[in-house]
Length: 63
Image 1 (cartoon, rainbow, N blue to C red):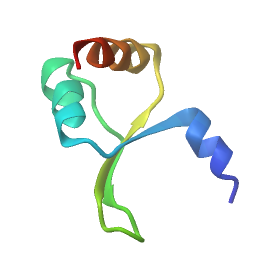
Image 2: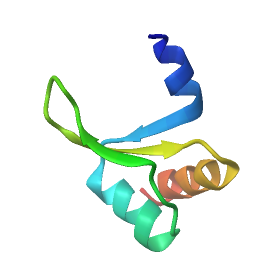
Image 3: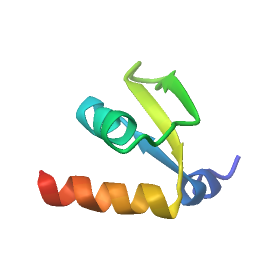
Image 4: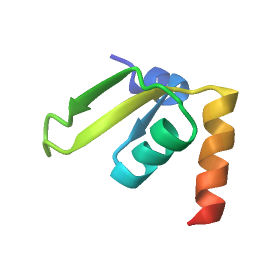
């Protein structure tokens, strides 16, 4: 499995506040929700899009 393909095409969100911002404030849907197999930390998987990139930049400037 080539992990670089996933990193280029998907964004792994491990932050609950960021997830809430993306979902509730920006209405961006995630591809799936899962738990990290090593740490059991929850994450949301988003497909990288221009909309997501702009939302992440906005979130970063706010925090």
